[in-house]
Image (cartoon, rainbow, N blue to C red; front, side, top):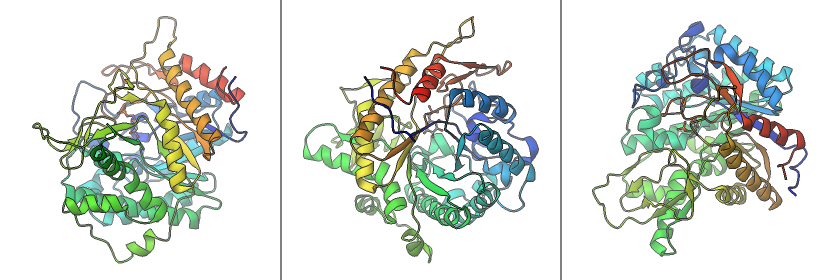
Length: 463
Ligand code: BGP
């Protein structure tokens, strides 16, 4: 029989603004880089309507209350608050999130708010985006506005969603490929922006807590060959530790520094950076976890060019450093993402051992092509199975001493995937639309909804 989770464990579910809200030009909202992003495939749903959560937020939060959530993770669209990224506040945007926050609190759901989830204002992108220092200042002003507007009610904050994935798969997320020198200057700016958010949150939000939110995939060596282990060491640093070491230790990871040196990248620091880096720290680490990655040391270029083709893919190549390898011991989902629940426990233990900070999982889940049956049901047993295995490993990690205080999977409701439209669904709540037909956008509870509801009620996995 399964043991219960700790009494105060937080059960949640997550979404982001641009993937759910739609209403992309309503109430004074400006355009973000997601609204303007060239899409690989114009046949698939974009973010203009998405799940229309902007208009359905009351219904959605009521359903999430019925699900029994302690926590709802959502992001604020920067362009609703500052349509041009900075300058005059758009009061309609402030008002909207006041209503969303109050609706959550009405049901005793704690909002976990992400300051920014992939949707930089296009006006800032036009000035150079994260490549230029002024975006750090604009972000700090934006964060300050949010802390002042909502800090009386929102006590848990997340900084910038997955800066590591933004940079590693820049073309998919940001819509353009960035040269390496510029990419890692962006890294520095994103990490510094986060430091300002830590500082301002602690100054402005009474009892406020804030954490970084990277995507962590522990990297395994393909074999016990020392060269493969070196490959894993470098990819672990470049993909995972560089980000969290900056956030939690206030320094550049040493292996990452060597990688930058070998690549000829030189980071430009502003005068105040050294001091800021070493002074402001998070209260917890939020982690998005989908899979682990396996790499080997590349021996032949085989016509492959350097880069990473997809968020969680094994199609990874950096000549001289690492190359993705298909782990023969792991299964894949229908979108080719490797599934590794045991790896979640190892990842949690590694993370906790490294940073000794409380951890919350803010994304984990299974993207699948769900089917709505004629009687209004969605039989997603594959998702229940995925969640059950991963939640089981969370419990094991807790029993092994990891301070894991919450689990907020992806996603609360169906949303538009980063680059695969609405057909790749993650939600507990089905949103009835197709790629090209928005229909009525009606909501249906999936089988996984009832399963998760039961788990939350009993605070343990069904035996
Ligand atoms: C994470 C992002 C999310 C989400 C998820 C699933 O990297 O933070 O925004 O979309 O991945 O990815 P996808 O939509 O490509 O299936």
